[in-house]
Image (cartoon, rainbow, N blue to C red; front, side, top):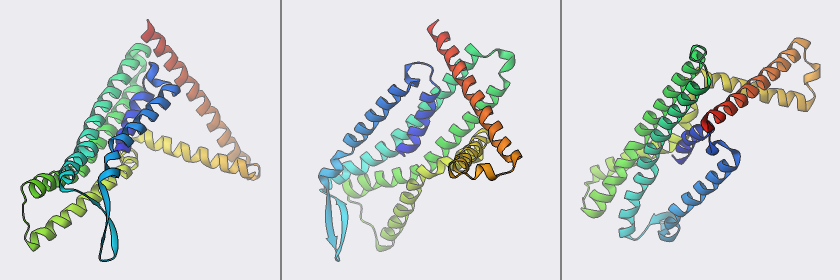
Length: 253
């Protein structure tokens, strides 16, 4: 879940035109995020214990008071808070891109940027909705376990216990799917992302063919295709850097 939140946060910082869009600041943000994540979960190393049951060791949360805290901490820290941050950074990213477009690009020439904005909005919307759908059962089952089972001492019948264990395991599997669905959300919802994926694959193929020496044995039209694509990528990169520089000057003024 932290990965999904970080991906949306990265969208915001990568489109930022102020100091947050620089590489040194990015390294600082990565370091701070890593340290805070470790410190926020260090209590698990203190209270989690290994219990051997029927000759099989397993990790168990003890004592019972900490179990209540853990079952409340998990949905808040790994479900509710990340979804809120994803929505917040998604909105800030859209605002940032639209502000940049308005300041730098003439109104009559920004139809392509409008299309990119629509794709970005769709991507972020799908990611937030699907992520929320996947993590909500896990958050609810942990809350019920903390309040209903640990605090109110709710007792299950054998059938009820089986149903609870089934729902618990299914919701946990859905939660663990969240880091993997981002690629499929972007691929299915954004033509621009699919185009960039294809371009990345072609660039990787070119590096392999060039590094192994196979490129010089390919037909001339294939070599020309790779060379033309490389020139086009360099031009697009230069235009992006120039546009970002112009936006930075606009912010300074």
